[in-house]
Each structure stands twice: as C-alpha cells, then as structure tokens.
Length: 265
Image (cartoon, rainbow, N blue to C red):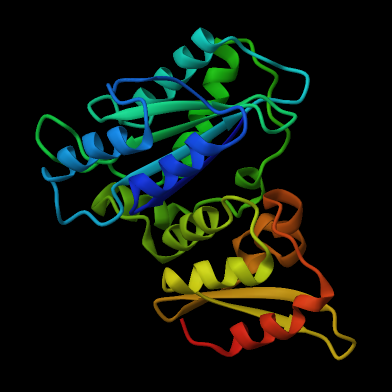
C-alpha cells in the first residue's frame, strides 16, 4: 500500500475536489455531513477552537496495487487504524473512495484540531510515521507490500537530528525541507509547478540546465541552508523526483524552469 499526505488551509477546496471526482463515494468518517458544503461547515465550526492554526487540513491518500481491491467496510477499518495511528483519533475526519484510476484507493480528510481541547495534532516526522504505520497495516490486513518508496530513497536521519527531535519536538531544517518537498509533490505536478509550490512554502529550488537544453540536477535552500538533491537522497534528485513522485518534465518547460530558478523564494 502506498500513502501520500499533504497539509493545507481550505477544507472546502479539497472536499469539492474529492466529491466531484468520477465515481467518488463518501464511505466513512465520523462526521454527519454528506456534501462538501455541510462537511466544510462542520470543519469550520471546530476550527474556532484553534483559529490561529493556518494549515488545519490534513489530506492523506492510501492506494493498493492494480490487482488488489477491498470492500468499503475493510477500507473503513484501515482508514480508522490509519487515523488513530497518525494521532487524529480525537479529530473530525471523512473518507472518500475513488474509482477514477486503475488502482483501488481512498482519500482521508481530517482536521488537525482536536475536538476536546483545540490542541494541534503534531506533524513532526509525519512522513516517517506514516511509512511505518502503513507497513504495519499491510501485515495486519494481509496486503501486498509496497515497492521501494521515496521514503526509502532518502538519506538516513542523523543521530544529531534525532536528538534534536527528542529534545525539542522539531524536525530541524533538513527534516522540514524533506516534509515540504514531499507535500509539494502530491498530485504529481510538473517541474515548474513543483518549483512554484516550494517557493510558496519558502523553499528555493534551483534546476541546472545544460548548454544543450537538458535539465540536470536540482538543489534546494531553506532558511539559508542549501542541500543538493543527492544529499537529501535518491528520491530528491532530478530523475528521482520523476521516478518516485511522478513529477513530469518536458523540454519545452526549460524557459519557465530557468525563470523560476532565478526567482527568490
């Protein structure tokens, strides 16, 4: 099973997208609403518990291989386990199932605001936690293990980074950068779209274009700290973004890529 996740600001936007997709079905969750409008109203009411939290939207997708399919009730069990495993057991969430692709998959939209006290569900190391959780769900529900993912093709977390996380609860620049890139690649964007999304999150992305017009190599900078794609891991190199994240590139994008490379974040 493959999982992707992203955080955002608009519940209505993501709900409209999920609800209007071909063969979309709302199959689960803990909310009363059945339409994007009614669900958004419920999410909005709870948002008043923590109005300062900008990115209150948590959107995750879980996908099976092409030859594997599950019934709605089993998908709901998996979604419930995933929600609890990621710390959203006291938050609102809704589950949609889509039939617009050749692989069985669901989408989960949850609020990062806990209902009892308005506290925020932590997003520290959420990509690593999600990968670990998905591996356990594969075993629990006898699902086909996912092929090597981008998570396995990132450089290992250093001892210093782990100590910082244990001490402060913060991922640090490198961890924040990895999470930002992971989120920006959701939806398989083009290279220019990825660069624009990274810039909107404060990350500068620079792509090297050769004299022959070929795009080669990518580097990133966050808070004045720069990393080459290679330093972050194979999945974050220029070809790795295409292989592991489905980021698309065509030579005619070079002019826009060059322009975005020169823009500050």
